[in-house]
Length: 337
Image 1: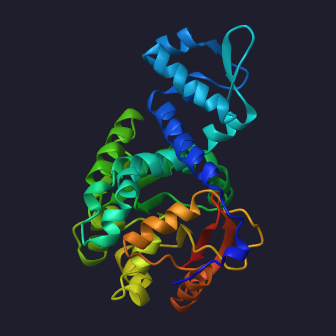
Image 2: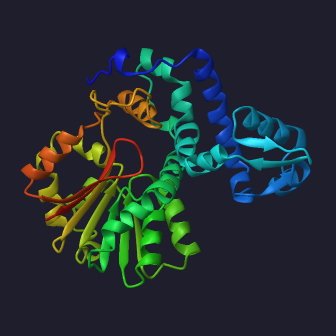
Image 3: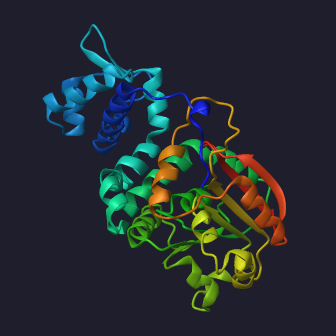
């Protein structure tokens, strides 16, 4: 197991840890009530106006906003209105991390002690729908522009997305590229339910198909041949580490995928890798500590950047591009088949 020594990391004082815990739950609560859809840059509103629009109890909403003010995300102004600060705008941009952690993995974090001392199962504690939603929010706010810098230079008509979550990425693809069709695959029924609703909401039923299945099943069965036959780009965002951890397929996974998708030209793979011992920044980045912790409890090894690149090369793939991809220690690879 990779370890980071104390000399590399600036210690967090207990007061920071406690206030950060409160702030994370405040951020998720504000997401739940839709406040960030109402307030934007240069928007000032009174607490009663915000309570009416969010359908919140006014004293409780004021408590949330006061907490946000103490933490630097909101300002109460002399005229009685509230507005977001520059740091509040940064929180809006990063809100997906809090939906992922507090919403998606919150119950797991609450049960860490029990999980550490027993063989208690963890799967039912994770909200797959909120994990998918948080990932999609990060995708939209932090990664989309970088992704299009790569995709805009490629010619394709069919794309598949393994671990598609709520389908938001495929919807965006269809909106940007009106000529394409796509298929999404995800093992989580809750995520696929959100994806199908997303497809209907955007009127893309004739262009997108969502499949609820283990991605491995698409390698072993001809059940989905009709939707796989024309795929030219196969994307896999933030889940390749799960496939990497299956020892029996790690060395042959790309051969299996090439067989399943006979017209494939490119793999487009994005994932978060292990934090490096050589990181120069003494402050820990957002996301990685929680990401590695929950995967430790799920007994899933997070590969290093070098682990991935050795696998790509050994699998006969050419690394056309590798770019930093929005989230710390996260990379987007364009791999030519």
